[in-house]
Image (cartoon, rainbow, N blue to C red; front, side, top):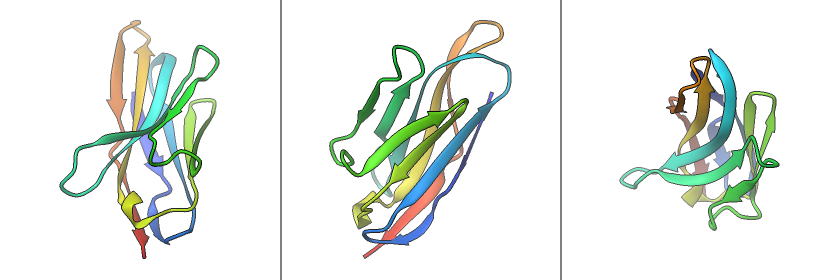
Length: 119
């Protein structure tokens, strides 16, 4: 199973970016996907998540509610980030909980994409 992220970059405060994460490989089903971020010197934190079952339930960190939106199209998940702030600067990682063709459920991570918001 492989996760490939794209869409990071440099943006001014108040601007927008859209991250994408495509999952591929020996997949039986995807249970959930999400985006985490890690700023320098800080722990990795959950930004947004979406279940692929149970009606596609989403959840967001309080710090991004109303500004970020997670969505999906088939095996790709997106993170639309609006009204970006300098404190959103971090490496953003895609996460997926996947059941493979052997029916084993495991978590997988992308390599991360850097988002830098200038003031």
